Amino acid sequence: YRGGKGIATAIGAFLIVEPVTTLSTIALALGCFAMTRRWSASGLLAVLLAPGMLLLFARPPRAELAVVLAVILVLAAHRSDIAELRARPAP
Image 1 (cartoon, rainbow, N blue to C red):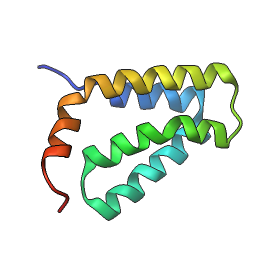
Image 2: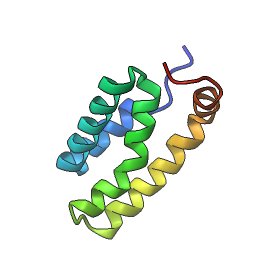
Image 3: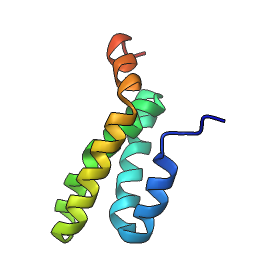
Image 4: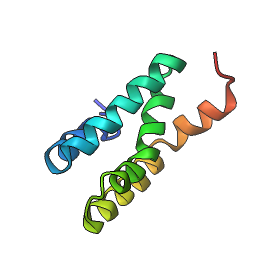
């Protein structure tokens, strides 16, 4: 019962606050998954692209700040996954 790292909760919250941006970011993650077949890499790439998506859709600065903080938290929570992805070659 260790639980996850908060990605599903974050997605749910962002769907309420920024639905178009969140759905666009999810589409990027799915596209990345279709090419790499790696969920962790796809999800992390989408998280890294999320602030850029907010800029693309000209969202308010407070939304940008919230997403940047969430990105920092997600990357911190997934640092072991990131190290594992860097250690093994792509399929």
